[in-house]
Image (tube, rainbow, N blue to C red; front, side, top):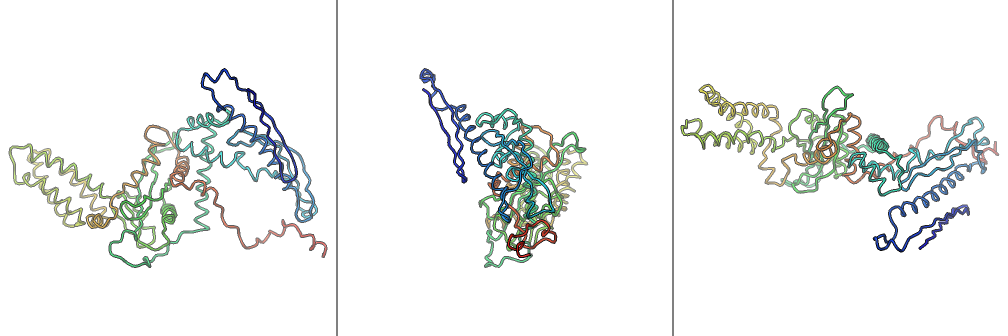
Length: 486
Protein backbone atom coordinates (compact mmCIF):
# COMPACT_ATOMS: atom_id res chain seq x y z
CA UNK A 1 0.00 0.00 0.00
CA UNK A 2 1.13 3.51 -0.81
CA UNK A 3 -0.19 6.54 1.02
CA UNK A 4 0.42 10.09 -0.19
CA UNK A 5 -0.08 12.90 2.30
CA UNK A 6 -0.41 16.48 1.01
CA UNK A 7 -0.23 19.39 3.46
CA UNK A 8 -1.35 22.86 2.37
CA UNK A 9 -1.15 26.00 4.47
CA UNK A 10 -2.82 29.39 3.92
CA UNK A 11 -1.89 32.54 5.84
CA UNK A 12 -3.60 35.92 6.30
CA UNK A 13 -1.71 37.41 3.35
CA UNK A 14 -2.98 34.85 0.80
CA UNK A 15 0.31 33.00 0.94
CA UNK A 16 0.21 29.29 0.21
CA UNK A 17 2.73 26.60 1.12
CA UNK A 18 2.43 22.94 0.27
CA UNK A 19 4.38 19.82 1.16
CA UNK A 20 4.01 16.16 0.25
CA UNK A 21 5.24 12.90 1.70
CA UNK A 22 4.70 9.24 0.87
CA UNK A 23 4.24 6.37 3.32
CA UNK A 24 4.50 2.81 2.05
CA UNK A 25 3.06 -0.19 3.88
CA UNK A 26 3.72 -3.79 2.92
CA UNK A 27 0.77 -6.16 3.25
CA UNK A 28 3.12 -8.96 4.23
CA UNK A 29 3.99 -7.15 7.45
CA UNK A 30 0.45 -7.46 8.77
CA UNK A 31 1.22 -11.00 9.88
CA UNK A 32 3.99 -9.58 12.07
CA UNK A 33 1.57 -7.28 13.86
CA UNK A 34 2.55 -4.05 12.07
CA UNK A 35 -0.88 -2.45 11.84
CA UNK A 36 -1.45 1.21 11.15
CA UNK A 37 1.08 3.98 11.67
CA UNK A 38 4.16 3.33 13.78
CA UNK A 39 5.94 5.78 16.03
CA UNK A 40 8.50 6.39 13.29
CA UNK A 41 5.72 7.22 10.80
CA UNK A 42 4.14 9.58 13.26
CA UNK A 43 7.46 11.30 13.84
CA UNK A 44 7.96 11.81 10.11
CA UNK A 45 4.48 13.23 9.60
CA UNK A 46 4.66 15.59 12.57
CA UNK A 47 8.16 16.76 11.61
CA UNK A 48 7.05 17.71 8.11
CA UNK A 49 3.90 19.41 9.39
CA UNK A 50 5.83 21.30 12.07
CA UNK A 51 8.39 22.61 9.60
CA UNK A 52 5.67 23.94 7.31
CA UNK A 53 3.73 25.62 10.10
CA UNK A 54 6.73 27.17 11.88
CA UNK A 55 8.23 28.59 8.69
CA UNK A 56 4.93 30.12 7.64
CA UNK A 57 4.33 31.60 11.09
CA UNK A 58 7.82 33.11 11.23
CA UNK A 59 7.48 34.63 7.77
CA UNK A 60 4.13 36.18 8.71
CA UNK A 61 5.57 37.57 11.95
CA UNK A 62 8.56 39.09 10.16
CA UNK A 63 6.25 40.70 7.59
CA UNK A 64 4.02 42.27 10.24
CA UNK A 65 7.05 43.43 12.24
CA UNK A 66 8.46 45.27 9.23
CA UNK A 67 5.32 47.38 8.87
CA UNK A 68 5.56 50.80 10.54
CA UNK A 69 2.16 51.87 11.82
CA UNK A 70 3.12 55.57 11.97
CA UNK A 71 4.31 56.25 8.42
CA UNK A 72 2.58 53.15 6.97
CA UNK A 73 5.65 51.87 5.15
CA UNK A 74 7.81 48.79 5.41
CA UNK A 75 11.12 49.03 7.22
CA UNK A 76 14.29 48.01 5.41
CA UNK A 77 15.96 44.63 5.97
CA UNK A 78 19.67 44.92 6.67
CA UNK A 79 20.69 41.27 6.15
CA UNK A 80 19.50 37.70 6.51
CA UNK A 81 20.56 34.95 8.86
CA UNK A 82 19.43 31.54 10.03
CA UNK A 83 17.86 30.59 13.34
CA UNK A 84 17.20 27.08 14.63
CA UNK A 85 14.02 26.72 16.64
CA UNK A 86 13.61 23.54 18.66
CA UNK A 87 10.05 22.31 19.10
CA UNK A 88 8.42 19.17 20.51
CA UNK A 89 8.12 17.87 16.94
CA UNK A 90 11.66 18.44 15.81
CA UNK A 91 14.09 21.22 15.01
CA UNK A 92 13.15 23.79 12.36
CA UNK A 93 15.61 26.14 10.64
CA UNK A 94 14.03 29.41 9.56
CA UNK A 95 15.19 32.63 7.98
CA UNK A 96 16.02 35.29 10.58
CA UNK A 97 16.37 38.77 9.02
CA UNK A 98 17.59 41.86 10.83
CA UNK A 99 15.20 44.77 10.40
CA UNK A 100 16.29 48.39 10.55
CA UNK A 101 14.43 51.02 12.53
CA UNK A 102 12.17 53.33 10.56
CA UNK A 103 14.36 56.16 9.24
CA UNK A 104 11.36 58.44 8.73
CA UNK A 105 9.92 58.18 12.24
CA UNK A 106 13.18 57.77 14.18
CA UNK A 107 15.92 59.38 12.03
CA UNK A 108 18.25 59.89 15.00
CA UNK A 109 18.25 56.25 16.16
CA UNK A 110 19.82 53.87 13.63
CA UNK A 111 19.82 50.25 14.69
CA UNK A 112 18.81 46.78 13.48
CA UNK A 113 17.18 43.99 15.46
CA UNK A 114 16.18 40.37 14.89
CA UNK A 115 12.47 40.11 15.55
CA UNK A 116 12.42 36.33 15.96
CA UNK A 117 14.32 36.72 19.22
CA UNK A 118 11.16 38.22 20.72
CA UNK A 119 8.96 35.17 20.09
CA UNK A 120 11.62 32.54 20.83
CA UNK A 121 14.40 33.90 23.08
CA UNK A 122 15.57 30.44 24.22
CA UNK A 123 15.71 29.01 20.66
CA UNK A 124 13.12 26.51 21.93
CA UNK A 125 9.38 26.77 22.24
CA UNK A 126 7.93 27.27 25.74
CA UNK A 127 6.15 23.92 25.43
CA UNK A 128 9.43 22.10 24.86
CA UNK A 129 11.11 24.00 27.70
CA UNK A 130 8.30 23.09 30.08
CA UNK A 131 8.19 19.46 28.98
CA UNK A 132 11.95 19.11 29.38
CA UNK A 133 11.82 20.66 32.84
CA UNK A 134 8.96 18.40 33.91
CA UNK A 135 10.78 15.23 32.88
CA UNK A 136 14.12 16.52 34.16
CA UNK A 137 12.65 17.19 37.60
CA UNK A 138 10.98 13.77 37.83
CA UNK A 139 13.81 11.49 36.68
CA UNK A 140 17.55 11.62 35.93
CA UNK A 141 18.50 13.80 33.00
CA UNK A 142 19.83 10.91 30.89
CA UNK A 143 16.64 8.92 31.32
CA UNK A 144 14.51 12.00 30.57
CA UNK A 145 16.47 12.57 27.34
CA UNK A 146 15.88 8.94 26.34
CA UNK A 147 12.14 9.28 26.98
CA UNK A 148 11.93 12.41 24.82
CA UNK A 149 13.85 10.78 21.98
CA UNK A 150 11.69 7.64 22.22
CA UNK A 151 8.31 9.25 21.70
CA UNK A 152 9.06 12.58 20.02
CA UNK A 153 11.04 13.44 16.87
CA UNK A 154 13.81 14.96 18.98
CA UNK A 155 17.28 14.67 17.43
CA UNK A 156 20.17 13.06 19.25
CA UNK A 157 21.68 16.49 19.92
CA UNK A 158 19.11 16.90 22.69
CA UNK A 159 21.43 15.43 25.30
CA UNK A 160 20.99 15.22 29.03
CA UNK A 161 23.00 18.45 29.42
CA UNK A 162 20.39 20.25 27.32
CA UNK A 163 17.64 19.00 29.63
CA UNK A 164 19.64 20.04 32.66
CA UNK A 165 20.13 23.53 31.22
CA UNK A 166 16.40 23.89 30.48
CA UNK A 167 15.40 22.68 33.92
CA UNK A 168 17.78 25.10 35.62
CA UNK A 169 16.60 27.88 33.30
CA UNK A 170 12.96 27.36 34.22
CA UNK A 171 13.84 27.12 37.90
CA UNK A 172 15.65 30.45 37.67
CA UNK A 173 12.67 31.91 35.81
CA UNK A 174 10.23 30.68 38.46
CA UNK A 175 12.40 32.22 41.16
CA UNK A 176 12.43 35.54 39.33
CA UNK A 177 8.65 35.40 38.82
CA UNK A 178 8.19 34.85 42.55
CA UNK A 179 10.27 37.93 43.36
CA UNK A 180 8.40 40.02 40.81
CA UNK A 181 5.07 38.84 42.15
CA UNK A 182 6.13 39.74 45.66
CA UNK A 183 6.92 43.25 44.46
CA UNK A 184 3.91 43.90 42.21
CA UNK A 185 1.28 41.78 44.03
CA UNK A 186 2.39 41.61 47.67
CA UNK A 187 0.28 39.28 49.81
CA UNK A 188 -1.69 40.87 52.59
CA UNK A 189 0.27 40.81 55.83
CA UNK A 190 -1.68 43.21 58.02
CA UNK A 191 -1.68 42.19 61.65
CA UNK A 192 -5.30 41.85 62.74
CA UNK A 193 -7.56 39.00 63.73
CA UNK A 194 -10.15 37.40 61.56
CA UNK A 195 -13.25 39.53 61.05
CA UNK A 196 -15.59 36.52 60.85
CA UNK A 197 -17.73 35.11 63.63
CA UNK A 198 -15.41 33.82 66.34
CA UNK A 199 -16.61 30.26 66.91
CA UNK A 200 -14.91 28.34 69.71
CA UNK A 201 -12.42 25.69 68.52
CA UNK A 202 -13.11 26.34 64.85
CA UNK A 203 -10.17 24.78 62.95
CA UNK A 204 -11.14 26.48 59.70
CA UNK A 205 -9.99 29.82 61.13
CA UNK A 206 -6.47 28.47 61.39
CA UNK A 207 -3.81 28.27 58.66
CA UNK A 208 -1.05 25.75 59.32
CA UNK A 209 2.49 25.90 57.95
CA UNK A 210 4.24 22.54 58.40
CA UNK A 211 7.94 23.15 57.89
CA UNK A 212 11.03 20.97 58.00
CA UNK A 213 14.58 20.82 56.67
CA UNK A 214 16.29 18.34 54.36
CA UNK A 215 20.01 17.68 53.97
CA UNK A 216 21.45 17.44 50.46
CA UNK A 217 24.97 16.40 49.52
CA UNK A 218 27.17 19.24 48.30
CA UNK A 219 29.06 19.18 45.05
CA UNK A 220 32.84 19.02 45.13
CA UNK A 221 33.16 22.72 44.60
CA UNK A 222 31.36 23.40 47.85
CA UNK A 223 33.15 23.56 51.17
CA UNK A 224 30.57 21.88 53.39
CA UNK A 225 29.62 18.23 53.15
CA UNK A 226 25.88 18.87 53.13
CA UNK A 227 23.61 21.87 53.14
CA UNK A 228 20.05 22.42 54.33
CA UNK A 229 16.95 22.93 52.21
CA UNK A 230 13.80 24.33 53.80
CA UNK A 231 10.65 22.50 52.72
CA UNK A 232 7.14 23.38 53.86
CA UNK A 233 3.50 22.82 53.10
CA UNK A 234 0.75 25.32 53.88
CA UNK A 235 -2.90 24.43 54.38
CA UNK A 236 -5.89 24.74 56.65
CA UNK A 237 -5.82 23.74 60.28
CA UNK A 238 -8.49 21.06 60.24
CA UNK A 239 -7.08 17.55 60.45
CA UNK A 240 -7.94 15.74 57.23
CA UNK A 241 -8.39 18.88 55.13
CA UNK A 242 -6.48 19.22 51.81
CA UNK A 243 -2.75 19.39 52.50
CA UNK A 244 -2.17 22.63 50.62
CA UNK A 245 0.68 24.16 48.62
CA UNK A 246 4.36 23.25 48.69
CA UNK A 247 7.25 25.64 48.80
CA UNK A 248 10.98 25.01 49.07
CA UNK A 249 13.98 27.29 49.27
CA UNK A 250 17.68 27.09 49.92
CA UNK A 251 17.71 30.62 51.35
CA UNK A 252 16.86 30.34 55.05
CA UNK A 253 16.82 34.07 55.76
CA UNK A 254 13.85 35.53 57.59
CA UNK A 255 12.71 37.65 54.63
CA UNK A 256 12.80 34.72 52.19
CA UNK A 257 10.89 32.38 54.52
CA UNK A 258 8.27 35.04 55.14
CA UNK A 259 7.81 35.77 51.44
CA UNK A 260 7.50 32.10 50.44
CA UNK A 261 5.12 31.29 53.28
CA UNK A 262 2.81 34.23 52.58
CA UNK A 263 2.61 33.43 48.87
CA UNK A 264 1.75 29.80 49.66
CA UNK A 265 -0.84 30.88 52.25
CA UNK A 266 -2.36 33.26 49.73
CA UNK A 267 -3.23 30.28 47.52
CA UNK A 268 -5.10 28.78 50.48
CA UNK A 269 -7.24 31.87 51.00
CA UNK A 270 -5.16 33.83 53.50
CA UNK A 271 -5.77 37.59 53.12
CA UNK A 272 -4.30 38.83 56.38
CA UNK A 273 -7.18 37.56 58.52
CA UNK A 274 -7.01 34.40 60.50
CA UNK A 275 -4.66 32.62 62.84
CA UNK A 276 -1.41 31.17 61.52
CA UNK A 277 0.27 28.22 63.21
CA UNK A 278 3.77 27.01 62.40
CA UNK A 279 4.49 23.36 63.25
CA UNK A 280 8.14 22.30 63.23
CA UNK A 281 10.58 20.01 65.02
CA UNK A 282 12.13 22.85 67.03
CA UNK A 283 15.21 23.50 64.87
CA UNK A 284 16.75 26.93 65.27
CA UNK A 285 16.28 27.77 61.59
CA UNK A 286 12.57 27.03 61.81
CA UNK A 287 12.11 29.47 64.69
CA UNK A 288 12.71 32.38 62.33
CA UNK A 289 9.45 31.89 60.48
CA UNK A 290 6.95 32.42 63.36
CA UNK A 291 8.70 35.66 64.28
CA UNK A 292 8.53 36.93 60.70
CA UNK A 293 4.88 36.12 59.93
CA UNK A 294 2.11 38.60 60.80
CA UNK A 295 0.39 38.24 64.13
CA UNK A 296 -1.38 36.28 65.49
CA UNK A 297 1.12 33.52 64.71
CA UNK A 298 1.78 30.59 67.03
CA UNK A 299 4.66 28.14 67.01
CA UNK A 300 4.02 24.50 67.98
CA UNK A 301 6.51 21.71 68.41
CA UNK A 302 5.59 18.57 66.54
CA UNK A 303 4.18 15.99 68.96
CA UNK A 304 5.79 13.15 67.07
CA UNK A 305 9.29 14.40 67.90
CA UNK A 306 8.42 14.68 71.60
CA UNK A 307 6.90 11.19 71.65
CA UNK A 308 9.93 9.70 69.87
CA UNK A 309 12.22 11.11 72.55
CA UNK A 310 10.13 9.49 75.29
CA UNK A 311 9.72 6.14 73.54
CA UNK A 312 13.28 4.81 74.20
CA UNK A 313 12.97 5.68 77.89
CA UNK A 314 9.63 3.85 78.07
CA UNK A 315 11.05 0.74 76.39
CA UNK A 316 14.04 0.53 78.75
CA UNK A 317 11.80 1.07 81.77
CA UNK A 318 9.40 -1.67 80.70
CA UNK A 319 12.32 -4.04 80.19
CA UNK A 320 13.71 -3.27 83.65
CA UNK A 321 10.37 -3.84 85.38
CA UNK A 322 9.54 -7.05 83.49
CA UNK A 323 12.90 -8.80 83.51
CA UNK A 324 14.49 -8.05 86.85
CA UNK A 325 13.96 -10.27 89.87
CA UNK A 326 15.13 -7.77 92.46
CA UNK A 327 13.04 -4.63 92.43
CA UNK A 328 13.70 -1.44 94.28
CA UNK A 329 11.33 1.37 95.10
CA UNK A 330 12.68 3.34 92.14
CA UNK A 331 12.25 0.60 89.54
CA UNK A 332 8.75 -0.49 90.62
CA UNK A 333 7.13 2.78 89.54
CA UNK A 334 9.66 3.72 86.85
CA UNK A 335 7.47 2.82 83.88
CA UNK A 336 4.47 4.53 85.48
CA UNK A 337 6.44 7.71 86.02
CA UNK A 338 7.50 7.86 82.39
CA UNK A 339 3.90 7.31 81.27
CA UNK A 340 2.83 10.09 83.61
CA UNK A 341 5.54 12.32 82.13
CA UNK A 342 4.19 11.68 78.64
CA UNK A 343 0.65 12.39 79.83
CA UNK A 344 1.70 15.77 81.28
CA UNK A 345 3.42 16.79 78.06
CA UNK A 346 0.39 15.66 76.02
CA UNK A 347 -1.82 18.00 78.04
CA UNK A 348 0.64 20.90 77.95
CA UNK A 349 1.67 20.79 81.63
CA UNK A 350 5.25 21.75 80.90
CA UNK A 351 6.32 22.93 84.37
CA UNK A 352 5.04 19.80 86.11
CA UNK A 353 6.66 17.63 83.44
CA UNK A 354 10.01 19.37 83.93
CA UNK A 355 9.85 18.92 87.69
CA UNK A 356 9.05 15.23 87.36
CA UNK A 357 11.77 14.78 84.75
CA UNK A 358 14.38 16.45 86.96
CA UNK A 359 13.41 14.15 89.85
CA UNK A 360 13.59 11.13 87.52
CA UNK A 361 17.07 12.12 86.34
CA UNK A 362 18.25 12.46 89.96
CA UNK A 363 16.88 9.00 90.85
CA UNK A 364 18.54 7.44 87.80
CA UNK A 365 21.84 9.08 88.76
CA UNK A 366 21.68 7.38 92.17
CA UNK A 367 21.03 4.00 90.55
CA UNK A 368 23.86 4.67 88.09
CA UNK A 369 26.26 5.11 90.99
CA UNK A 370 25.14 1.71 92.28
CA UNK A 371 26.21 0.12 88.96
CA UNK A 372 22.89 0.05 87.09
CA UNK A 373 23.78 0.72 83.45
CA UNK A 374 20.15 0.71 82.25
CA UNK A 375 19.28 3.44 84.72
CA UNK A 376 22.26 5.43 83.50
CA UNK A 377 20.98 5.18 79.93
CA UNK A 378 17.53 6.40 81.01
CA UNK A 379 19.24 9.30 82.77
CA UNK A 380 21.08 10.29 79.60
CA UNK A 381 17.90 10.15 77.50
CA UNK A 382 16.04 12.10 80.17
CA UNK A 383 18.69 14.81 80.23
CA UNK A 384 18.45 15.21 76.45
CA UNK A 385 14.65 15.39 76.71
CA UNK A 386 14.89 17.99 79.48
CA UNK A 387 17.17 20.18 77.38
CA UNK A 388 14.80 19.86 74.41
CA UNK A 389 11.80 20.86 76.53
CA UNK A 390 13.60 23.85 78.04
CA UNK A 391 14.61 25.16 74.63
CA UNK A 392 11.06 24.82 73.25
CA UNK A 393 9.01 25.46 76.38
CA UNK A 394 6.90 28.21 74.81
CA UNK A 395 6.03 26.01 71.80
CA UNK A 396 4.60 23.06 73.77
CA UNK A 397 0.81 23.35 73.95
CA UNK A 398 -2.15 21.24 75.04
CA UNK A 399 -1.98 18.63 72.28
CA UNK A 400 -4.94 16.73 73.68
CA UNK A 401 -7.26 19.71 73.35
CA UNK A 402 -6.05 20.42 69.80
CA UNK A 403 -6.50 16.79 68.81
CA UNK A 404 -10.04 16.59 70.21
CA UNK A 405 -10.99 19.81 68.40
CA UNK A 406 -9.83 18.33 65.09
CA UNK A 407 -6.68 20.42 64.63
CA UNK A 408 -3.26 19.35 63.43
CA UNK A 409 -0.61 18.49 66.01
CA UNK A 410 2.14 16.94 63.88
CA UNK A 411 4.36 18.04 61.01
CA UNK A 412 3.57 14.96 58.94
CA UNK A 413 2.79 17.21 55.95
CA UNK A 414 6.33 18.59 56.07
CA UNK A 415 7.82 15.11 56.43
CA UNK A 416 5.94 13.92 53.36
CA UNK A 417 6.95 17.08 51.51
CA UNK A 418 10.62 16.35 52.22
CA UNK A 419 10.19 12.83 50.88
CA UNK A 420 8.26 13.98 47.79
CA UNK A 421 10.30 17.02 46.84
CA UNK A 422 13.84 16.17 47.93
CA UNK A 423 14.32 12.51 48.78
CA UNK A 424 12.83 10.92 45.66
CA UNK A 425 14.87 13.02 43.25
CA UNK A 426 18.01 14.09 45.09
CA UNK A 427 18.80 11.88 48.08
CA UNK A 428 17.51 8.31 48.24
CA UNK A 429 18.34 6.22 45.19
CA UNK A 430 20.10 8.96 43.25
CA UNK A 431 23.27 9.72 45.16
CA UNK A 432 23.98 12.96 43.35
CA UNK A 433 25.99 15.94 44.47
CA UNK A 434 24.27 19.28 44.12
CA UNK A 435 25.27 22.90 44.29
CA UNK A 436 23.17 25.18 46.44
CA UNK A 437 21.92 27.13 43.42
CA UNK A 438 21.17 24.01 41.36
CA UNK A 439 19.21 22.32 44.15
CA UNK A 440 17.20 25.49 44.77
CA UNK A 441 16.21 25.83 41.10
CA UNK A 442 15.36 22.15 40.79
CA UNK A 443 13.05 22.35 43.81
CA UNK A 444 11.26 25.36 42.34
CA UNK A 445 10.26 23.26 39.33
CA UNK A 446 9.27 20.25 41.44
CA UNK A 447 7.19 22.36 43.83
CA UNK A 448 5.40 24.11 40.95
CA UNK A 449 4.67 20.73 39.34
CA UNK A 450 3.21 19.26 42.52
CA UNK A 451 1.15 22.40 43.09
CA UNK A 452 -0.19 22.12 39.54
CA UNK A 453 0.57 25.74 38.60
CA UNK A 454 3.81 25.44 36.62
CA UNK A 455 2.30 26.76 33.39
CA UNK A 456 0.37 29.47 35.20
CA UNK A 457 3.43 30.74 37.06
CA UNK A 458 5.54 30.78 33.90
CA UNK A 459 2.85 32.67 31.99
CA UNK A 460 2.45 35.36 34.67
CA UNK A 461 3.62 38.80 33.59
CA UNK A 462 4.07 41.89 35.78
CA UNK A 463 1.56 44.67 35.13
CA UNK A 464 2.61 47.30 32.63
CA UNK A 465 3.51 50.68 34.11
CA UNK A 466 0.85 53.35 33.71
CA UNK A 467 3.23 56.31 34.03
CA UNK A 468 5.49 57.61 31.31
CA UNK A 469 9.23 57.41 31.67
CA UNK A 470 11.27 60.58 31.45
CA UNK A 471 13.27 59.56 28.38
CA UNK A 472 10.57 57.57 26.57
CA UNK A 473 9.84 60.44 24.16
CA UNK A 474 13.28 60.01 22.57
CA UNK A 475 12.35 56.58 21.22
CA UNK A 476 8.66 57.13 20.46
CA UNK A 477 7.79 57.74 16.77
CA UNK A 478 6.00 60.95 15.89
CA UNK A 479 2.44 60.49 14.55
CA UNK A 480 2.02 61.52 10.88
CA UNK A 481 -0.67 64.15 11.59
CA UNK A 482 1.40 65.83 14.27
CA UNK A 483 4.41 65.77 11.95
CA UNK A 484 2.34 67.41 9.16
CA UNK A 485 1.04 70.06 11.54
CA UNK A 486 4.58 70.96 12.54
